[in-house]
Image (cartoon, rainbow, N blue to C red):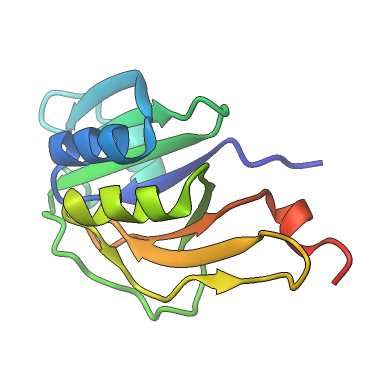
Length: 156
């Protein structure tokens, strides 16, 4: 059986993203930041094997939540990240985080340069289960839940 351990996100500024995810969600650095430069690395290297031979220079860092879920942030420097967006409903298009206080979290997101993308939706008539779509300053969609997925959708 598989279990999600982390999600990888591309950002245009690694240092700003580390700061943002720390301030808004309390993520902390588990490992890194790491730097890759094809000019000084071995010709047969893990970065280009995983990311493709066109990646010549990048940085990445592993962040961790107090709940044990990780986010790996990537800053592609060469070729430079240009904020490309894929078709919004193909493949991976958002991550979902459980938060204690939905309103306060949305306020922190906006205060630190992100935005609220949708209104807050109640998913159950009888229970205080809510969700909302937000976005980080780098264009990544972050869905917020007030409970875990099994609680939000069990019995539906």
